[in-house]
Structure formats: C-alpha cells, structure tokens
Length: 235
Image 1 (tube, rainbow, N blue to C red):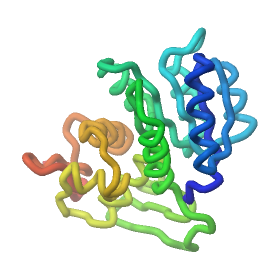
Image 2 (image 1 turned 90 degrees about the vertical axis):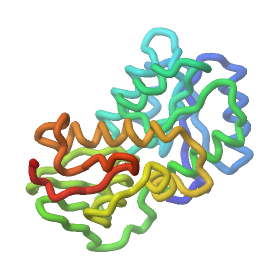
Image 3 (image 1 turned 90 degrees about the horizontal axis):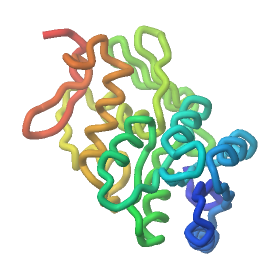
C-alpha cells in the first residue's frame, strides 16, 4: 500500500505530544485522526477505519494494551504501532504479543516514526490487488488477493506483519532465512528495528499455525541462522 494519503489514528492522552505527532504526519501527506483515550480510539477506529494506529501504552482508563487487543480482534488488517516508555522492554514484548506490528520508544524522532509507518504500510496489499495470485505449499495456501491464509482449507487470521512474514517463508519453502533477511524482506532495507521483533512475530504465527507450538514442524528454527518453512511433519 502507498503511504501517500494513508489514514493514521494517533492515540495519545498528552495533547502536546499528540499534536506534535499529528503536525509531522500532516507535513508528510498523511490524513490524521486523533484520540485522547482508549474508548474514543475504538469508536474512531470503527467509524473511520484507519490504515495505521499509533497507540500509546499509557492511557487513562483503558490502556493501550487493551485497545490493541480489541482493534486487532475486530480489524485485523490495521497496522498498529505502539509507543512505549524508554527501558520498558516488557511493554514492547507485550504489545507485540497482543498483535502490534511495531513499536517506538519515547522520546523519538518524528522522522523515524514516519519511516516506521511507511515501512509497515509497504507490507499492505497494493490497490488494485493482483487477481488470482495464490501461493500453495502442502496443506498451506496464501491468498495474496484476499490477504487470507489457510491451513487444510481452514482460514487462520494473521496480522499484516504475520501475513508478510508467511509470504516470505511460503514463497521459499525449506530455505533458511536469517532474522536480518526476514526484516529486510518484510519491513524494507531502510528499516532499523530490533531483531527480537521478528522472534515475537514468529512465535505468534506458530501459536496459530502449529498443532504443538512448543515443537513446531511448519516454522522451524535454524540454529545460528534464523527460520525456515519446513515440511509440516513432526520429527
């Protein structure tokens, strides 16, 4: 998806920070929506269907984690970027575990946030989609047009980031990818993020795909390298 004209919902209770983010998004040709708490964010997301939600963890009332979970359940294809406090590693991991696509640590350079938004939007399908494009491997099927993923004809709901990772792996079965290669393929070569982000997304995919996530047979760990799509058979 092209970043130009994309709709971004900024959820931040501190007005000065929210306005600062909004101004920089406007300057980079994004359409901006604003919310100061979780309840307002959910209503705006449901009404306006943004492409991206920039979501602060610390919100009055309903916190960012709960908002993330609710948005992800009802609107799985929205990109969610969470804002966390410096040094709060558990906040980063929890946000990703609940379905966030990415995170930023406060304070941050607004240009980096713009770059993160654009990198995540590149994972979204272009409009119009390529008609009839599907990738098959054993019992798995990735529908690029409908942005759907199936195992044994049963749909498995994936976030945009999870879908992009499966596109890389499913398009190259049995090939080992390093974390760097996965990150470059999914987020782009100009993206500089924490490689642990890849591990968390892989863990979430395994929980949805594997019969036994603790003993995965589809997404295998290649020690010292990264991950590969295996044959789907238990060793």
